[in-house]
Length: 562
Image 1: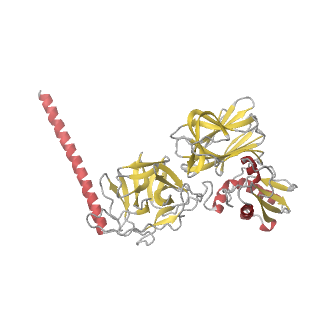
Image 2: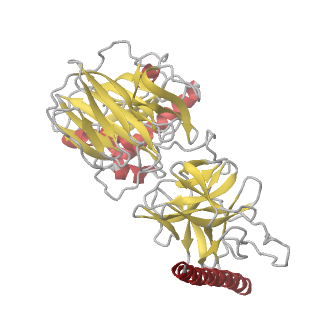
Image 3: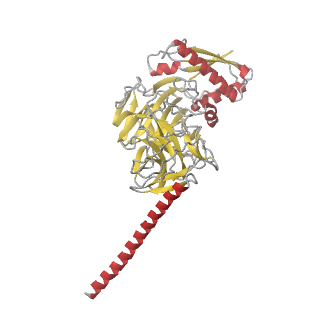
């Protein structure tokens, strides 16, 4: 009995001390929070600091405004801790939490911090993912520093996160995650108040709930007013913000696609929520869905799931052949895409383009797997271009501007391909723009050129524009080397389109594209006097315009000897 009573007394004393300590710690936090708020009211815009906000707490009066929501309410710069990392995001005075993007979704945290004090803050445009050295740090994730960014989306100005080299601002909106390629980043512009930031002036009278008297939205003159995920004016996710800088990044790219298109589908003629017409579903589940306003095929269920392009001939692959596609990486988990090669001996080989840019080989005679050459690259939340060429039993694979693997002497005879892998509704495989072509890697370098012309499909442009896609560098480099090896050679660069659209628009577009190719070759060191240009529009088709493959064949650049 005495032992029990003594134990109870010890427990009560320890519990009381622990409770008292916790009580006083919480009290200290509340006092410190109130002191911070009072200090901010007395010394507005003195310095930047992260102010902790709990359930029911008020946003400090000098909280940094980063945008405006759909209903006109101001959005404040915030960040929240999730799985041990701080993620920049947004909050409002009428919210009980901060919203941020993670893993392709919009998440909410009820305990978060708000950035306060706008002295020396400004917003800076970001081009090609190159963040300025004075970008304001907002968090950390997987060894990558995260910065505060903002962008125009669906008629609002949203706040999100980005990192060095990322070509988009990752935002949460409507429960989903979006990656917007035109954005600004928060920077520290130095001492003194900045006039371009337009921080609202607050009326701190009781009962005003910290609402601003002046609702000036931060300057967004450099962002398009009509930018949204469903807008036809949205930039294509494959294009670089700056054409010249993007082409330089791909300066050593040597992939040249095949000349004869066997199959092509960009899914843009499909319908969201349906299965694409030009494909067969062998196993699992797949459906068309949108990523930033563009249709892509989501493989959502199956272990393994297989989708197969519908080609008339069962054995349609030649030697050589090329395959290209774009795949989207949502998270650092299972978000690559696998291309299966069906062989003449009924075996199946797999090439897996992973979420970190790595390439793995499945069921080959040996392991040809290799990591992405840029070990510091952050590939999540972006589209990536995957390609490979098969020639004389050898396979070369590419991801974005890098050649990742060489698989010599694979000892296979390919006959067809299919796409698939492990499908998951919460983490699907996502791809678009699949193109299969016969031929590839034209071996013209280092020999005397005697042909009348070179017909290329490897110089690709954004839809309806004369902007050259970076993955065209393999073909451009090939033309450059041919001209270096043959200094007397002069070319007319001919631009050709398919029959979509009116003739006049196509004629102008083809001329603009030919001019863009000429300029790209000049930038690579070719004398411009050796190059002339002419746009032919839709007037010289080399195939029908009744199929995607025919249209793709007609969209070409020809180098005609003069």
